[in-house]
Image 1 (cartoon, each protein chain N blue to C red):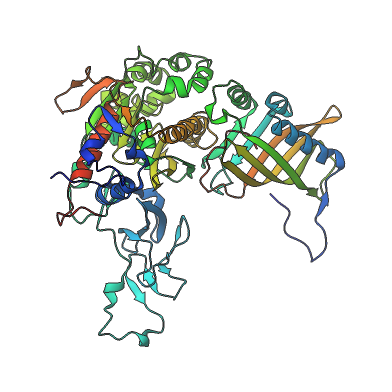
Image 2 (image 1 turned 45 degrees about the horizontal axis):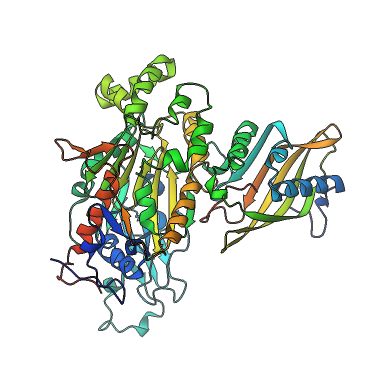
Length: 173
Length: 443
């Protein structure tokens, strides 16, 4: 998934992503911070996939349970529940801010129709009086150029603690 | 024997005063003294689920888990035997195994180097000349084994008590439903190797055990999920809001020994009995099941009973079988509970069927599921509300006078009734009031 096998020390195999790619990820984070979920789902391509693996299992969702593994139709249904007022795990809602950094692509990535973009997510969640959590994740977006902008063909969020006990991940990462 | 249990410095309620068949006292969920007593008298005695045989399928495989507050290792030794060992070095008490699962012939304590076989026996003490044989008999320092281990249909249970009811006696009427869960597989075996959902909440462990067989809450807590499910095409969509409605033909039952059941088969079975034989794939599956189970009728009964939320089973005190999952409730403190959900796949079924089980499970369960996190929210609201000591009682009145006891002693109520919760607390009381082997009550 990530580019780690360096040909020799100091020779870069990654490069910083273009500014418009990074800006797209910041925009996505802002939509989620502000719970503008409908607009967020609209960022996905029609055949898009959103995936949060579980248990470090990564690999194969056919054989491994995931935290979320949903197509766009399922995401729309999820967002519908989140905004319905009946998803009590988000009543009151989590207040969040997300920092997206270390945005890079493989150095030899071609300029074709899709780009695989790696980033690091730090998200802080505050809820009710006493709950404060920090979530850390490596994110992988497959972005597709469409009409001068981007659509998310695939987003994978690898939480550093995906094998641990969570209180509530009903908000989206 | 009535035993006085010091509840708070200012009150002296005995366990019998805390549950009175139609109501539970708030301190049952809030008092650390009662929690400590539960760990000794309930978790220290009864059978507890520790894993599934498929999790330690190969020689040397192990998993770690907890029995009550005790860290344990469940291992498979070279001879194929299953061992449940306290994960505690017999020297300075450090845990000897640090991982959720793995494969190893031995466990070495990293603190002073004592090493044990995966059946618990001590291989050696480092710098052994420092131990005089007159002081130190090797076997005396084996990892301590949990005294009783038994399995039922691949599910591994252990008991920290030397004596007591057998696993068979303990499971009693619950066995029939474990059979339904496992027999859904064409070869009669499930596999529990697809990973684990884990969540935690700031509330008492009993809130989860009770909720898993509470048919009164879904149409309220989960109305958002159920109403979006009801927009699905077809008959299953129509069913969503009806399963746990006041007008549902489903049942809730007291199975005895504290075990409880929510039975949605009256809703699900008529539908699946039509749908399953209507496709080539369904007929082929039913044929395979019929050959193994002995009759087409039994095949249809099993195939239509579960796999689509046909029942929820609580095995006292902390094991739930719901949908495709085995769920284990781990008490951590009076107001902190960890929960593990193990989706089971069906051995002998095509990958796409098992993947469908996983995706269906995730849609509702797990930390980001469409339903389970809303339950956790309720548990935390309950735990906060329980701080109001001015209002001490929680009623368990629902359906109290409309149950029907069958020939097996099973008390059946409406699916929204509180038979399972009353059954749970009755067993709780029985164990809390029983004296230990020496006649003494743990302090």
